[in-house]
Amino acid sequence: MEVRVAKSAGFCFGVERAVNKVYEQVRTGKKNVYTFGPIIHNEQVVKDLEEKGIRVLHSKEELTQLTEGTVIIRSHGVCREIYDLMEEQGLEVVDATCPFVRKIHRIVKEDSAKGRTIIIIGNSSHPEVEGIRGWSSTPAAVVETPEDVEELDFLPDTPVTIVSQTTFNNKKFQDIVEKILEKRYDSIVVNTICNATSERQTEAKAIASDVEAMIVIGGKHSSNTQKLYEICKKECKNTYYIQTLEDLAVQDFQAVRTVGITAGASTPKNIIEEVQANVRVKF
Image (cartoon, rainbow, N blue to C red; front, side, top):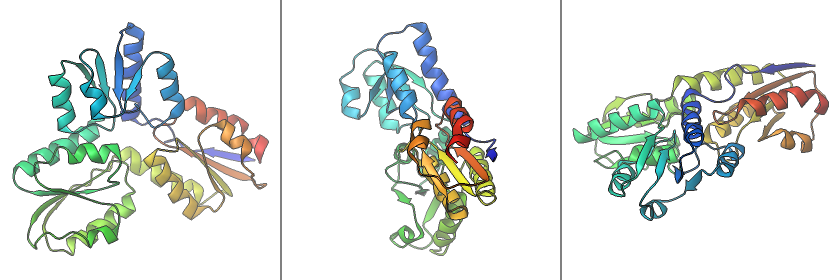
């Protein structure tokens, strides 16, 4: 059997940077260390960090109850209000926001200050999008589908700046932008999908179109992994979404000669290697 593993599979730059910053805090032996939200969408990594004393804050309300300690901002970033709140509480802040996400924050902050309306293409409930929206001083709309664009009711010639969630599907982004441009706004389009995401999606599509079965590895709450699964499923009907080797064991696979493997940006290298080492047993 031939097994093809995507070169782009696993931690992206932003995620690896964020995870390393948390483990640096562990190595220093510092007490009262928190992450604002799970550092990444991977249950195994989050559990390991919790066992090492890193606690997860899930809401602004939990943050207001802290008067000391260190809070790590995950790669998804947070809104300006959270930064201000941490400063008011006198907390030490370790900012692990992905630099590509911080770039979007700057664009949104600067353009909204000029009076431009912000349109974010992405999932409105995703923490990255919630954070981006929180840097706008003008109304910020979020659209995820071409149908959502129909709900936009800004007047023609309204100055708008269009940005994207970094992990959004590139083809869907282009389709949605075309729909927005039909609204005849005064539009500035900034494609803020990161290169790593585009490369990962392109490579996954190419492999899936050339194998008999495709395995996508990632956390069940990982937005970028879900998008990889959708892309691969269109190319290869035998596409499987798993989190760990244990999930591989319970899947009912068909006998095939070629298998492809890719993984989301929050998937540790050791999990990918475990699946790669054991995939021949299942097929």
